[in-house]
Image (cartoon, rainbow, N blue to C red; front, side, top):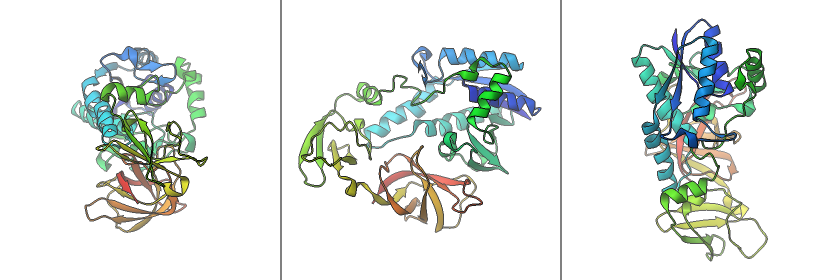
Length: 357
């Protein structure tokens, strides 16, 4: 096959490209330039997609003997990922920009362009597996990225290759070292790539300005503090609330109301939710019959929760949790996995969280 290897400059994408070459594919490497000023996108291990990363990707491509290009997708990335991120926080939701990047950049813009240029598939360094066209968790549970890939449709998965899903991250680094890749020991990027200093609240404050409002304790109805903007909070947050609630019990963010600029907090007994409502879902393997039993993952690094999934009147999903969960934030993705032991790593689909009860 003719495949396009998306090369970020990290160890995962380097080894993924190498494995595609080993498999006999006709491989071309491409690095995505995602910012008008790429010098600002990396600070140590934070961030990615910098000029340094482009140079690292090119060196690996040269060592593999494959053609290499840089595609400028900065404008689309800004519109579809960065601006979306800011708008979601302004609306009181907590987005996942990695999920949005996979959906709108890597497997929409890049895959569409690759197919138009005659490529059969895009290979990436994601830690997930494709088995008979079905998306499954990586064998390395600590590095599994199936959660952020669950937005992909079956036709997009048909144009994807994930060579790393059957190995651990330790083995990936070993393979890179065996090949003499300089990126073998390169630190993984983490957090949000376009906020390399990790200060999400500061980034949003610069974009949205100060928007002060009250912090209200749900137990008493009393205003216990003020804030500079609801965008500085996410549902389930415990630290950094900046309030004194009058007793020693910890408080959690229960709700965010951006119109009145009200942040509602409460004790742990008020923080659990038993049902999650989502937008119209994306099914990675075709729409199943509802209702169904499944396991749902409600955060990128959360654990699976047994649940019953039903169709909501608006075409979204109503997900009834077997056990109440804290920190289920609107804007995140509720990713559904098959419930049985044999297929428990199989991704069924996902829906964006609209609300809870």
